[in-house]
Image (cartoon, rainbow, N blue to C red; front, side):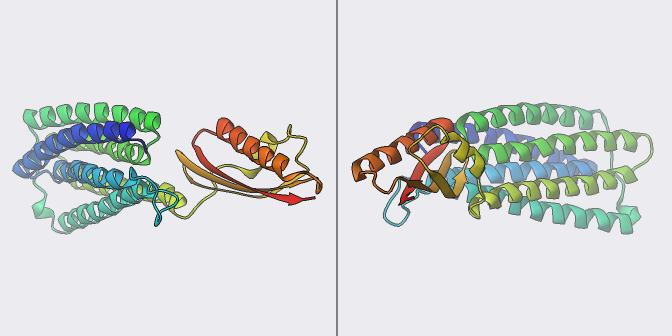
Length: 288
């Protein structure tokens, strides 16, 4: 990760951190005042956004370090590891919200939320902020090829649905159906858990060296190189912005070493141009 890219990501995370904590405090404080479990849970969800931003800042700081003797492939997976930390925070929040929701369902006398005009104003403002943050962070994540920004934007995306369910629950409270507030809390907890699962699934693929590029696509890319007789043992791994390719090719057994080296260099150049994000290509040449 270049210094310029790191500076951009860090600046984005600092601004989003301030917005997320402002949104979280508004919902937590007013949710506590009005005894609205749905609003309070949504505030905790937003607070976890801020916590994930801090985790991201730490993870990206480590990820941008250059390669060294102990880390010959670099440190970029630390950013993916930070994404896994976000998922862990989400699972914990989902569990606590679900536990409180079930507790209130069992003890119905605890269900006494209040809904007024200020409740709708708070939710309207925070919903608008969440939508703006999610769109901006997702676009920047794709632009900068940052796993963390994309994962964090999906976290914020779940906030939008959670906030919509809170607004619905507030309407139901005004209509005299307060139990919907608890039901909304359960829905939010399930939504938070699903987002955590989705982040875990994508991050674990990187950490477990899941194939990034289909082997057949690499073979097709080399089809016009007539010096290559065969291509096998193709392996790919890494993140979208840090892809490593290993492959074996067979050539004429009488090919000079110098020509074989030039062919290897040409293969590396072609694959880097064909597949954006490729940072390393290891070509093993064998006699046919």
